[in-house]
Image (cartoon, rainbow, N blue to C red):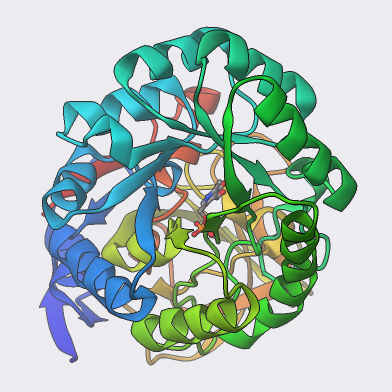
Amino acid sequence: MHMTAYFAGASAPSFAVDSRLEAYAATAEFDRPTLVIDVDRVETQFEALRAGLGRADIHYAVKANPHPAIIERLVQLGSHFDAASRAEIELCLSQGARPEHVSFGNTIKRVSDIAFAHNAGIRMFAVDAEEELEKIAEHAPGAQVYVRLIVETSTADWPLTRKFGCDRDMALKLLDRATELGLEPLGFSFHVGSQTRHAEMWAPVLDELSRIWAAAKAAGHDLELLNIGGGFPAFYGEEIQAPTDYAAAVMELVEDRFPGARRVMAEPGRGMVAEAGVIACEVMLTSRKSERDMHRWVYLSIGRFSGLAETEGEAIRYQFVTPHDGETTGPCILAGPSCDSADVLYEKRPMNLPLSLKSGDRVLIRNTGAYTSTYSSVCFNGFPPLDVVVI
Ligand SMILES: Cc1ncc(COP(=O)(O)O)c(C=O)c1O
């Protein structure tokens, strides 16, 4: 669908926007960079993923976007939740989630948060280290745990690296140790890497992890749960599969490789909410560093510290909509507004933007509903954090 929206800007007349969300972001008045979220779009995405995930329980990864309106809608739809901290647990419970539907998925937890979660009725906890098991055994006695496996072969755009998970031998040891400590080891979890663009990219990871699953079974562990984490992609300009097809293809790969998994859990974050959000910001300045400079610099009112942290390493390449689209374009180095030299969004691969773009023009950034508002610093350089509006 293409519609033309007009906004009350002094110079540029119109945007070609492709949704109700973008039409709103193009026309409403904002006095600072603002993420506009369409909660109906989250619902559509949830249903699409659910259709493909079949028997898997969806635990929405709250960290992707913890706006209460999103959590509330997902509770109504029957979603479960993956929480990273006490605050995320409290948020889910305050929006009506049942504690047994909230898992504490961070492998690094404060002792007081473990105790809080236990007292609040949270039953499932992630672990990847013996010390974490001991903390849980002491502060959440009898809890259910799943052991996070390390994924070192991710081909995702935003891999989760060696920070999380443990290897096969450690995982088997932790299962034994959990039982010794009076905990209930349920199975394994992993994360294939965020923004894994195609379902077949999961296959090598699942192959490797299924061997660990088989080894645990052979060692006498009656594993019931496989938590396949997140990784479900959003559209940032490069082709991706539709969510239902993607999720169904992932589940097929899972069912082939983990025949004994009685319970499967998935934790989509980005894939659930990214396409439900658009950021409205403005051009602060355009310039060239010399008369001979081939590139223009375009400084936006939003940058690395005010919501676009995932431009780190130019890993996530957002799509920009301007009121001059269709006019002649040229390569631009895109940067944020702060007095910090790291606040450059795209330089290695400059963005092509209209040459007529200038200070004051509104710019929309597509599919930015995930990992933006919560990454936004509170007041770096005195810039206010990304505002959020729900339509
Ligand atoms: C434990 C866990 N589950 C799920 C997710 C969500 O991943 P994604 O946004 O790629 O779906 C994350 C993201 O960091 C995570 O840490």
